[in-house]
Image (tube, rainbow, N blue to C red; front, side, top):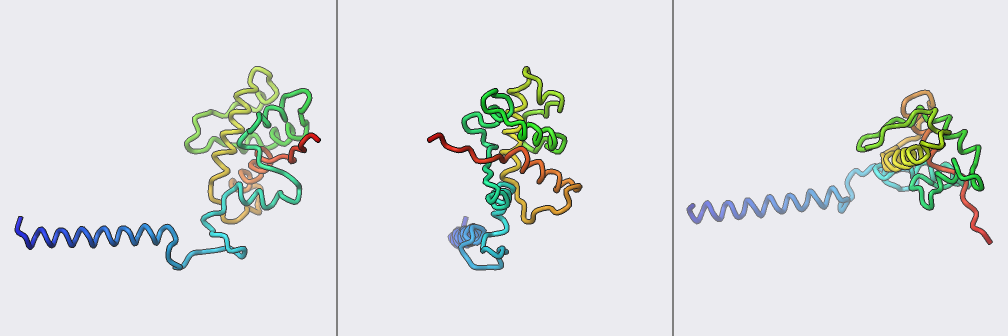
Length: 170
C-alpha cells in the first residue's frame, strides 16, 4: 500500500469514526433536533404502557404488580387470607385479550385454568411475564376504542397488571 493510500485510508477511517460518533451522540439526544415531546415535556419515545397506566391510575391508588414482588399476584388470586375476588374477576374479564407477546416463552393457559388449583403457578407466571412484556412497549397515545386490538390490550394491561396499593401494616 502506498503512503498516500495509507494516509487516505487513515483519514477516511477517522472521518467514518467521527461521523459514527456524531450519529451515536445524535441518537442519544445530545443535540436539540426535532425531538417530539408531549405537553409535560416527556419524550414520546419514553411513553410505555406502564408509564401511561401509572399516570392514569394514580388517582385510584393503584400500583403496578406485574413484577410480582412478594408473590402479590398469587396472593391476590389464590391465598385464602389475601385473596381478592375483584382481582380474580378482573383477570378473568381480560384473560382472552392477554395474547402471548413476542419473546415470551410461556403459552397462555386456558381461561378455565384460572381457578384450577393445579394450574396456579402457570397462571401466575403467565400474568407476570405478560405484564412485564407489555409494560415496556411504547404507547404514545392511550387507545380510546376498547374494541380495537390496542384498546383490548390496554384494558387487559390495566386490569391484570395493576391493583390497589398494598397498605403497610402498622
